[in-house]
Amino acid sequence: MNEELTNDEVEIDLVDLGYVLLDKWRYLLISLIAGAVLLGAYSFFFIAPTYESTAKLYVVSASDDSVVNLSDLNLGTSLTADYEQLMLSYPVLNRVIDRLDLDVTSDELAKAFSLNNPSDTRILEITATSTDPQMAMDLAETMAEEAIDYLPDTMSTLAPNLAQHAKLPESKVAPSYTKFTMIGALLGLLICAAFFIVKYLMDDTIHTADDMEKYFGLVPLTTIPDSDQVIDLDEEQHRRRGRKRGRKK
Image (cartoon, rainbow, N blue to C red; front, side, top):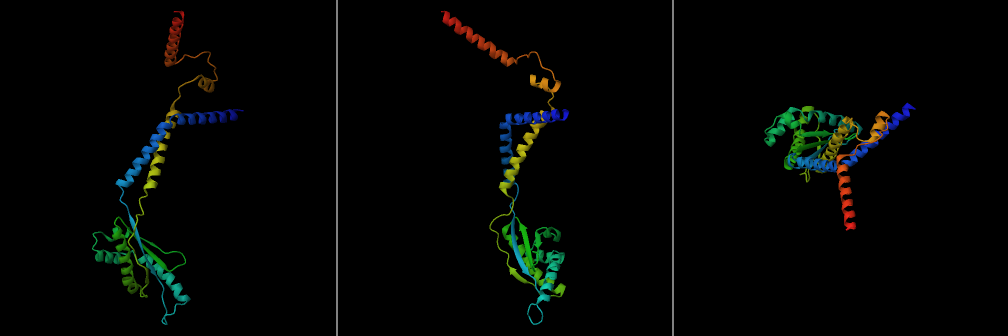
């Protein structure tokens, strides 16, 4: 029985809380719009757009008769993993820096690249990211060319083939203004709702006769009207008296 009462109280509290939030819908709406505008504007004015360009290498080792057999394909798979590990080593990165005359360190340049070897393939994807679309293309293309030139001698293998040249990106990859705007709207709504929820939970004052009965099990014999209600009642009585006097005349 007590468990049922407890559940009923929780349900009533949630309903009351829902009404509190519903009553504050204007503030919630304003916070939602403000959050969307603020974070959307931040992403537009303060976050530089970034671009990506990708070059692809095909790594396969041909036998002496220039016919690719199964062992060559298996060796190519192993070489692809080796290329992936060695491509971002400082000798290759320094060659890219010297060729493009970049004012960065090899560690800083390494952060601009991401390498990907799709499963069950001998393809190595070299993706460069930059705030300048031309630089993104130059980085990916130069890295591919320097890897083809430097790594085969180091690994004593045949050079891989350049399967895809890097191209100039036509659109940015980040930031997503729509995503930032939606996140801002959600954050604004949640912050505003959290404020009213905390305020509601911390409010232990008695507001209505129903609160007295719910929290203390007491039914009040009478209630004192709010001052605004008293003023409204006095004004209504004054208007009625005025109408009666007018009729008597």
